Amino acid sequence: MNIKRNIPLVAVGFVILAVAGLQGCSATSKSKTGTSKSKIGETAKTDTTRSIAPYFATASSSIKTPDAEGFIQRWLLLEPINKPIRSNTIFTDSYIRAAFDTLYFPNQFTVLPKDGDQVKVGDQELTWHALDTKNFDAKLFRFAYGLRKQTYGVLFWAVTVVNCPQEMKNVRLAVGSNSASMWWLNGKEALMLSGDRRMVMDDGVSPRLTLNKGKNIIRGAVINGPGMSDFCVRLLDETGAPIKNITISFE
Image (cartoon, rainbow, N blue to C red; front, side):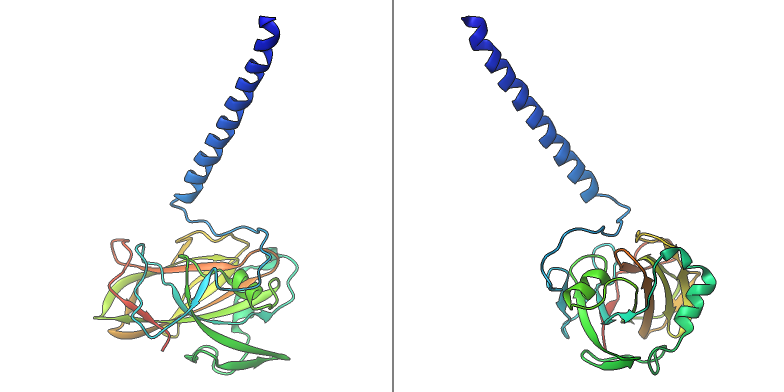
């Protein structure tokens, strides 16, 4: 009789231990990914909402500084330009240069757009949005998805203004993007990331640059076929430390 009563108790004990072990593994995994210093971009996941609100907030005229790690979180983003791309393996240096040298809209390399400005690209009417990102990166897939725009086979343009209290030399622009991208500082090419890649912080770092006292314009273009799209940008000083004594605006 004692044996019959003990068997279920032992089985229950094994079940409790197994569940606790699984919960422990889950918690450990979450902790490791949540504190990863590589800051890898997001992967595809189910999202039934069609809003940019979880990822972006409308930018205001209030002073905006980089986050604690120096990432720029205020951007003017243009709604995606449709560009039929079936595979990201085509993103060679020559392909990227040709894609970004193409004139899609007037003054694309010099314009400082305003929130709500519209441009015409082929048969598309696209709008600029002044936004603050809620994460260290700008989640372009979520931006397009939330606005009910095309999410795959797209090209995005991004612009921001960095305001410096004084001239800063030997600065580097550090970028991660999914997928390929090109970046300019004050109208001059600073950095290109080609190939099919996931977004990882500081994946590409520019040669030494100079930030002017006052306004400096960072301009970027990100292209992607299938998959998620996002980017992250920060400025590093000559020692490799993130620059945080600057302000970010969209005007």
